[in-house]
Length: 227
Image 1 (spheres, one colour):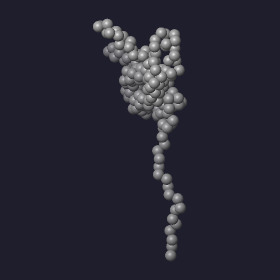
Image 2 (image 1 turned 60 degrees about the horizontal axis):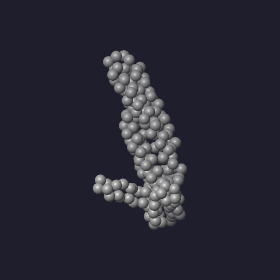
Image 3 (image 1 turned 180 degrees about the vertical axis):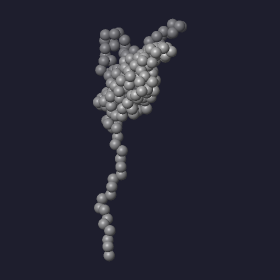
Image 4 (image 1 turned 135 degrees about the horizontal axis):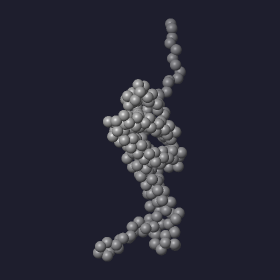
Protein backbone atom coordinates (compact mmCIF):
# COMPACT_ATOMS: atom_id res chain seq x y z
CA UNK A 1 0.00 0.00 0.00
CA UNK A 2 1.48 3.32 -1.08
CA UNK A 3 1.75 6.09 1.42
CA UNK A 4 1.94 9.79 0.64
CA UNK A 5 4.70 11.90 2.10
CA UNK A 6 3.35 14.39 4.60
CA UNK A 7 5.31 17.64 4.81
CA UNK A 8 6.75 18.24 8.24
CA UNK A 9 6.67 22.02 7.91
CA UNK A 10 3.90 24.37 6.89
CA UNK A 11 4.54 27.43 4.75
CA UNK A 12 4.36 30.67 6.68
CA UNK A 13 1.74 33.18 5.62
CA UNK A 14 3.01 35.96 3.44
CA UNK A 15 3.61 39.19 5.29
CA UNK A 16 4.07 42.34 3.27
CA UNK A 17 7.24 44.24 4.02
CA UNK A 18 6.70 47.53 5.79
CA UNK A 19 8.20 50.69 4.32
CA UNK A 20 11.58 51.75 5.64
CA UNK A 21 11.18 53.59 8.92
CA UNK A 22 7.53 52.61 9.38
CA UNK A 23 8.26 51.10 12.80
CA UNK A 24 11.05 53.40 14.02
CA UNK A 25 9.69 56.80 13.07
CA UNK A 26 10.27 58.65 16.32
CA UNK A 27 10.97 62.37 16.46
CA UNK A 28 14.75 61.80 16.48
CA UNK A 29 14.88 59.02 13.87
CA UNK A 30 16.71 59.53 10.60
CA UNK A 31 13.52 58.67 8.73
CA UNK A 32 11.66 61.51 10.44
CA UNK A 33 14.39 64.03 9.73
CA UNK A 34 14.51 62.98 6.09
CA UNK A 35 10.78 63.72 5.93
CA UNK A 36 11.42 67.13 7.52
CA UNK A 37 14.28 67.76 5.12
CA UNK A 38 12.06 66.92 2.19
CA UNK A 39 9.50 69.51 3.29
CA UNK A 40 12.10 72.22 3.88
CA UNK A 41 13.89 71.66 0.56
CA UNK A 42 10.55 71.54 -1.25
CA UNK A 43 9.83 75.12 -0.18
CA UNK A 44 12.41 76.92 -2.39
CA UNK A 45 11.99 74.38 -5.18
CA UNK A 46 8.24 74.96 -5.21
CA UNK A 47 8.76 78.69 -5.64
CA UNK A 48 11.31 78.24 -8.43
CA UNK A 49 9.20 75.64 -10.25
CA UNK A 50 6.02 77.68 -10.00
CA UNK A 51 7.70 80.86 -11.26
CA UNK A 52 9.28 78.97 -14.16
CA UNK A 53 6.05 77.24 -15.13
CA UNK A 54 3.79 80.29 -14.90
CA UNK A 55 6.27 82.64 -16.60
CA UNK A 56 7.04 80.43 -19.58
CA UNK A 57 3.44 79.26 -19.93
CA UNK A 58 2.13 82.82 -19.97
CA UNK A 59 4.85 83.96 -22.35
CA UNK A 60 4.42 80.99 -24.67
CA UNK A 61 0.63 81.24 -24.73
CA UNK A 62 0.78 84.97 -25.36
CA UNK A 63 3.19 84.50 -28.26
CA UNK A 64 1.43 81.41 -29.64
CA UNK A 65 0.00 83.49 -32.50
CA UNK A 66 3.57 83.96 -33.67
CA UNK A 67 6.31 81.46 -34.35
CA UNK A 68 8.20 82.55 -31.24
CA UNK A 69 5.63 81.14 -28.82
CA UNK A 70 6.16 77.48 -29.72
CA UNK A 71 9.88 77.31 -28.85
CA UNK A 72 9.03 78.95 -25.52
CA UNK A 73 6.49 76.23 -24.78
CA UNK A 74 9.01 73.57 -25.82
CA UNK A 75 11.50 75.11 -23.37
CA UNK A 76 8.79 75.02 -20.70
CA UNK A 77 8.21 71.30 -21.22
CA UNK A 78 11.94 70.57 -21.24
CA UNK A 79 12.45 72.55 -18.04
CA UNK A 80 9.50 70.86 -16.34
CA UNK A 81 10.86 67.46 -17.33
CA UNK A 82 14.22 68.35 -15.84
CA UNK A 83 12.66 69.52 -12.58
CA UNK A 84 10.54 66.38 -12.56
CA UNK A 85 13.63 64.19 -12.82
CA UNK A 86 15.10 66.03 -9.86
CA UNK A 87 11.88 65.55 -7.89
CA UNK A 88 11.91 61.81 -8.56
CA UNK A 89 15.49 61.69 -7.32
CA UNK A 90 14.62 63.63 -4.17
CA UNK A 91 11.63 61.40 -3.50
CA UNK A 92 13.81 58.32 -3.89
CA UNK A 93 16.58 59.60 -1.65
CA UNK A 94 14.53 61.26 1.09
CA UNK A 95 11.17 59.47 1.04
CA UNK A 96 12.23 56.04 -0.20
CA UNK A 97 9.88 56.36 -3.19
CA UNK A 98 11.39 54.85 -6.32
CA UNK A 99 9.55 55.40 -9.57
CA UNK A 100 10.23 54.80 -13.25
CA UNK A 101 11.08 57.65 -15.58
CA UNK A 102 8.32 58.75 -17.97
CA UNK A 103 8.34 57.95 -21.67
CA UNK A 104 11.00 59.73 -23.75
CA UNK A 105 10.22 63.00 -25.47
CA UNK A 106 8.33 62.22 -28.68
CA UNK A 107 9.95 63.04 -31.99
CA UNK A 108 8.46 64.97 -34.87
CA UNK A 109 10.01 68.37 -34.32
CA UNK A 110 8.28 71.15 -32.43
CA UNK A 111 4.82 69.72 -33.05
CA UNK A 112 5.79 66.37 -31.55
CA UNK A 113 7.46 68.00 -28.56
CA UNK A 114 4.35 70.06 -27.86
CA UNK A 115 2.39 66.80 -27.72
CA UNK A 116 4.61 65.57 -24.87
CA UNK A 117 2.06 64.35 -22.32
CA UNK A 118 4.69 63.65 -19.67
CA UNK A 119 6.04 67.17 -20.07
CA UNK A 120 2.62 68.75 -19.56
CA UNK A 121 2.02 66.56 -16.52
CA UNK A 122 5.33 67.82 -15.11
CA UNK A 123 4.14 71.40 -15.68
CA UNK A 124 0.91 70.58 -13.86
CA UNK A 125 2.96 69.16 -10.98
CA UNK A 126 4.86 72.42 -10.54
CA UNK A 127 1.69 74.52 -10.56
CA UNK A 128 -0.54 72.26 -8.47
CA UNK A 129 2.01 71.44 -5.78
CA UNK A 130 3.04 75.06 -5.15
CA UNK A 131 0.31 75.97 -2.62
CA UNK A 132 0.46 72.56 -0.97
CA UNK A 133 4.20 72.75 -0.39
CA UNK A 134 3.95 76.23 1.04
CA UNK A 135 1.28 75.00 3.46
CA UNK A 136 3.34 71.91 4.34
CA UNK A 137 6.35 74.10 5.09
CA UNK A 138 4.34 76.37 7.41
CA UNK A 139 2.68 73.46 9.26
CA UNK A 140 5.93 71.52 9.68
CA UNK A 141 7.93 74.51 10.90
CA UNK A 142 5.17 75.53 13.32
CA UNK A 143 4.86 72.04 14.81
CA UNK A 144 8.60 71.58 15.15
CA UNK A 145 9.24 74.92 16.82
CA UNK A 146 6.17 74.80 19.07
CA UNK A 147 6.72 71.22 20.16
CA UNK A 148 10.38 71.54 21.06
CA UNK A 149 10.06 74.99 22.67
CA UNK A 150 7.30 73.80 24.98
CA UNK A 151 8.83 70.37 25.62
CA UNK A 152 12.09 71.92 26.80
CA UNK A 153 10.39 74.58 28.94
CA UNK A 154 11.59 73.09 32.28
CA UNK A 155 15.17 73.69 31.18
CA UNK A 156 14.82 77.45 30.71
CA UNK A 157 11.73 78.47 32.70
CA UNK A 158 14.00 80.04 35.35
CA UNK A 159 15.15 82.67 32.85
CA UNK A 160 11.85 84.59 32.89
CA UNK A 161 11.62 85.47 36.61
CA UNK A 162 15.38 85.90 36.88
CA UNK A 163 16.18 88.07 33.87
CA UNK A 164 12.94 89.13 32.17
CA UNK A 165 10.92 90.16 35.21
CA UNK A 166 7.96 87.90 34.47
CA UNK A 167 6.61 85.59 37.19
CA UNK A 168 6.93 82.71 34.71
CA UNK A 169 6.50 81.80 31.07
CA UNK A 170 3.98 84.23 29.61
CA UNK A 171 1.12 82.60 27.76
CA UNK A 172 -0.80 85.85 27.30
CA UNK A 173 -0.97 89.27 28.94
CA UNK A 174 -3.26 91.97 27.60
CA UNK A 175 -5.67 94.67 28.72
CA UNK A 176 -9.15 94.95 27.23
CA UNK A 177 -11.05 98.11 26.37
CA UNK A 178 -12.50 98.36 29.88
CA UNK A 179 -9.03 98.46 31.39
CA UNK A 180 -9.21 94.93 32.77
CA UNK A 181 -5.95 93.03 32.55
CA UNK A 182 -5.98 89.42 31.41
CA UNK A 183 -2.77 87.52 32.10
CA UNK A 184 -1.69 83.93 32.45
CA UNK A 185 1.81 82.75 33.29
CA UNK A 186 3.22 79.27 33.79
CA UNK A 187 4.82 79.63 37.19
CA UNK A 188 4.45 76.49 39.29
CA UNK A 189 6.25 73.20 38.87
CA UNK A 190 2.99 71.50 37.90
CA UNK A 191 2.08 74.11 35.29
CA UNK A 192 5.50 73.92 33.66
CA UNK A 193 5.49 70.12 33.82
CA UNK A 194 2.03 69.87 32.24
CA UNK A 195 3.04 72.24 29.47
CA UNK A 196 6.17 70.20 28.86
CA UNK A 197 4.09 67.04 28.49
CA UNK A 198 1.95 68.77 25.89
CA UNK A 199 5.12 69.78 24.07
CA UNK A 200 6.44 66.22 24.16
CA UNK A 201 3.14 65.05 22.70
CA UNK A 202 3.56 67.54 19.85
CA UNK A 203 7.14 66.39 19.29
CA UNK A 204 5.96 62.79 18.83
CA UNK A 205 2.94 63.84 16.75
CA UNK A 206 4.97 65.96 14.33
CA UNK A 207 6.59 63.12 12.32
CA UNK A 208 3.19 61.48 11.89
CA UNK A 209 1.66 64.69 10.56
CA UNK A 210 4.63 65.43 8.31
CA UNK A 211 4.55 61.94 6.83
CA UNK A 212 0.86 62.45 6.06
CA UNK A 213 1.65 65.78 4.41
CA UNK A 214 4.38 64.16 2.33
CA UNK A 215 1.89 61.49 1.34
CA UNK A 216 0.36 64.03 -1.02
CA UNK A 217 3.80 64.56 -2.57
CA UNK A 218 4.25 60.81 -2.93
CA UNK A 219 0.94 60.52 -4.75
CA UNK A 220 1.75 63.51 -6.98
CA UNK A 221 5.17 62.12 -7.92
CA UNK A 222 3.63 58.76 -8.79
CA UNK A 223 0.74 60.24 -10.72
CA UNK A 224 2.38 63.14 -12.55
CA UNK A 225 6.12 62.46 -12.79
CA UNK A 226 6.48 58.69 -13.05
CA UNK A 227 6.27 56.54 -16.12
